Length: 284
Ligand code: PAF
Image (cartoon, rainbow, N blue to C red):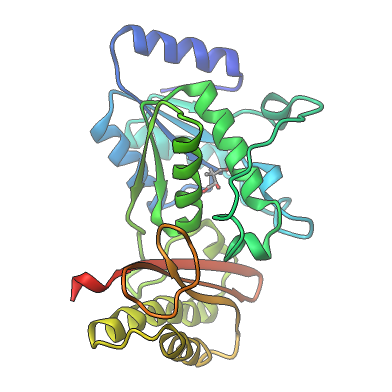
């Protein structure tokens, strides 16, 4: 496995892989790798011949007052994980490499970035799409891998790729969960044992949404009320949003009559946690 810090060396190594006719994968990450990332990397290793993982804590997707400084950066452990999974190249650029001294070009996806996390984290998705556009341009992968846990992010990136005719496929892999349902996240490190137990209510509320739809209840107001009820069982949980949206347009809907994204964001202690599931009325 190689580790490259510069754009020039990544380009050179990827060019060599392409000249060997290898299919290139990119797994963009911010490091602090966990079993969710490992699932993405394993899928990339299975599908492709040359797997690039980027590790870059992207400052432009953090809002003022968020956890940019304290975001975990266990680089040695991350490199060991990449090596074990069979990654070919890890790209660990500096902020200077990625943004130079005066970056004036930004990528913005409209509409889809307005609800959910977009409303609460202004500028977040502009940072995500800009860094992903840069990574796609540097690595030029055939396939890029993202997790369903960041459901809105996956939808936004797919739209950017489609709208800008970027020549790659985006593969979205299922959310990896703890045995109690808590979605695996780098930010779970901020939770105490009790807070982790409370956080399991997030998935419980999402499952409840699915069960209600299966029972024929499709009125989103009633479902959301019930989900909020479940979350309120733990006083430590501060709800940011509980939403049921059209899974393609991310518009609010009154009734679950198509594929929907049920999404939750909460704060528990130091951590902001998000999770979602796709629910299809046709699944009943
Ligand atoms: O999902 C993440 O970890 C980040 O948002 C990403 C896609 C690596 C961009 O910085």
